[in-house]
Image (cartoon, rainbow, N blue to C red; front, side, top):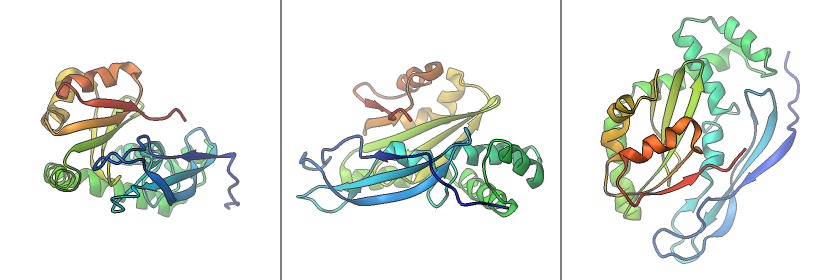
Length: 232
């Protein structure tokens, strides 16, 4: 039986860059892009408020926090790590009941139906033609913003790594890669052709945990600006 979830506290995020990429004007707050209670693998619940900003001159795009965006997938109140956990264990043929028990032991409220829904959602993204998706998103960024900006998240589940590649401007997931090693050759195989693009100007990603960030930097052209996700 579920009970009403009470968040421990609110975490409020604004865009990591408050300057318009088109005209360099300072962005101004317009409205909250999202405001929801999210469950995390720690068993804690936080209200995550993502503030949207607009350029007072261009007025054609809403910019928001990539940190808040990557904490949970759009439409879900479970952290991205919980979603990847569900995908990881379902792929290994764990039953819904067993996964539910594992999550309940972490104080995470979830139903059998939500487990299937989250698994199928990630599976759809995982199985999509991400090469075509990335190519399409890159072109859209160039057409509208004249440059490419990415958001890259790394999630570790046991001995497997999930690398999630987001469109920085729109916040949508372009690809989910799962690999069993952060070896340079494997990262180059999975990401090299997408990161070695002269139009990439900025990447927001994790801090230099396990040298992942330094490995990513080797794959990108010189001059790419890096920003770390705000510490949660």
